[in-house]
Length: 149
Image (tube, rainbow, N blue to C red; front, side):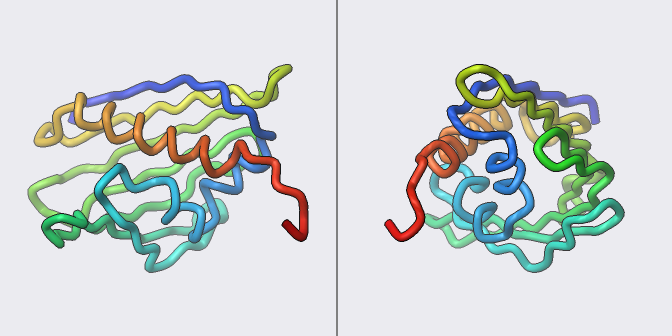
């Protein structure tokens, strides 16, 4: 359980909007699953000590894998830290994810660290998946659409 991935992006969106994308079930289904997957949020209690459970389904094969975890730290517009684990016994252990948000002149600097990736999952797959997810996150949070549009 030594796999770690790190990401750094600057998004043209306010930190509060990006933060909300990490704790809103409908938003999570829109941006988090990598290309070729759909998502279902089964439960979400976005508070320190609260938990969540969701599934990704491979659209091509129909195979589903579920995972969930607990929120350890939530600072609106600044930081999220949570643990998650797969329900598949072949993917044991707990992963920890930290998301730091910092306002910059053109939007928000986003730093993500995911630690404890199960040995059965090559980290390069995690890099690919997160890159796809972060591209979809940008598509969700960067548009500035006025009310009523």
